[in-house]
Every structure is written in C-alpha cells, then in structure tokens.
Length: 65
Image 1 (cartoon, helix red, strand yellow):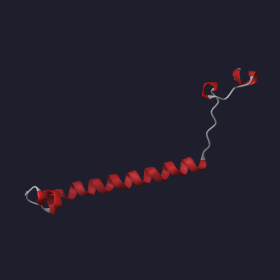
Image 2 (tube, helix red, strand yellow):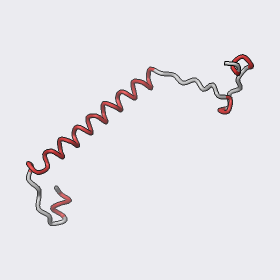
Image 3 (cartoon, helix red, strand yellow):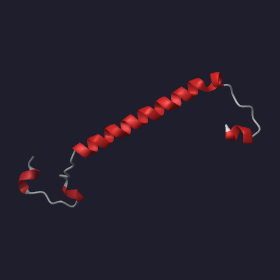
Image 4 (cartoon, helix red, strand yellow):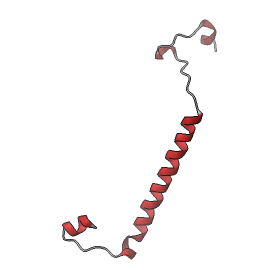
C-alpha cells in the first residue's frame, strides 16, 4: 500500500486482492513447511562420498562393487 500511495495510485479494495493475499500466505506456509522438512532430513541423514574423484581413495574391494 505505501508503494501505491507513493505512486499516487488508488488502493485496491480488499475483495479485489484477497485471493492473491491468500495465495501468497499459502505459498509462504508451504515454503516454511518444506524448509522445516528439509532441515529435519539434513539433521537425520549422513552423507558418505564413495567416488575417488572427490579426494578419497577407494580400495580394490570397493572398486568391484
């Protein structure tokens, strides 16, 4: 609204923008849920790099698997 007032544009009625506001709030909620879920997965998981190209040498036994 401040940007509209600064540009001397009329403020839209709530009925005209309520759908967009609900959509934005839903997107924010989904984003927060996704971020929380990803954080919990990161906290629970571990990563082991097996490719020797990343600086770790693999033994002869590992190369056959």
